[in-house]
Amino acid sequence: MKLQKASRYALFAVLHLASEPERQFSTAEIAESYGVSIHHLAKVMRTLVRSGLIESVRGVGGGYRFSGNVRRTTLWDVIHEFESLESGIDTPDELRGNAEIVVTGLDAVMNEIDGLNRSTLDSITLKTLLRYGVENLDNAP
Amino acid sequence: MHKEKPVITVHVADAADIDAVAALDAAITGTEKATYWNDIFERFAGINQRRKRYFLVAKSANDELLGFIVGEIRAWEFGSPPCGWVLALSVTPDQRQQGIGTLLFEALCAQMKKDGATTIRTMVLGNDKTNLSFFRGEGLAAGPYIELERRLD
Image 1: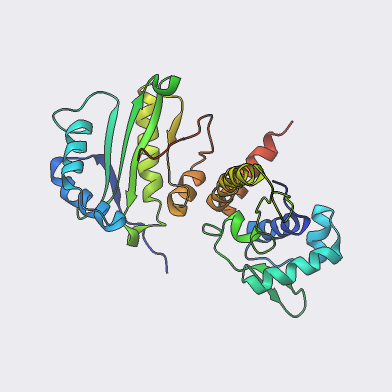
Image 2: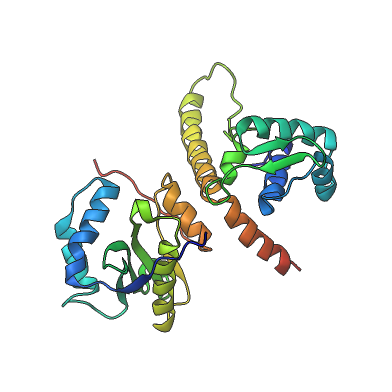
């Protein structure tokens, strides 16, 4: 499984905002903190606003603020706004001979992997990642 | 205005708690299993209790059941050295988000640690977001074992 760039940027932004929910940050501030493209992040921020995970604050010092529940919002809640994480098997339209049986078996395996991936991402809340992720960062060599 | 935190106590279950435990479980799972809970009580807190089995309840100041946890230290199943298992954990739905599950879990961890366990594990349905998120929040993550099963029909 590889997260798309948009999902990664969205997680950076949502975790950044959720770590200080009373504050608002501009796209430029977040982009600079994580060393990512401000142009691409701006598109991601619009999707996050539409999803209701963040809200835009107008006026002087405006920007974005986290508007979800940090104890309830999971990594999957953020990621699935951008991708489905379904592992496809690249197969020709018409399967011949034993290929159909093998592909059916492989599809079942990929579905199992996808289910585990989704369950894992849907079990980790932003609060949990902020708590343990930050501890791990602190302990990183 | 400052809201006072309710007084919550955690202690070993006694026979008088079991009807409320069975009712809470039935309300959450939709399946009545009074016989099962009476059996669990006998084996984990009652007359047939063995060492290293735990059945704790969380109660309000007026003796109302708020939640319960059941656990056991098991050794060498699946080749695992002694390890604490959480077998059941429930908190009354309208009392959640107050740290009752954490109180129960921490009390269980403390007892298991005192009795020699160095690891605690549990098993949760993959789509049970409430319990998965809770245990993740308590620091549990995927361990070295993978659950496998098949139907027998």
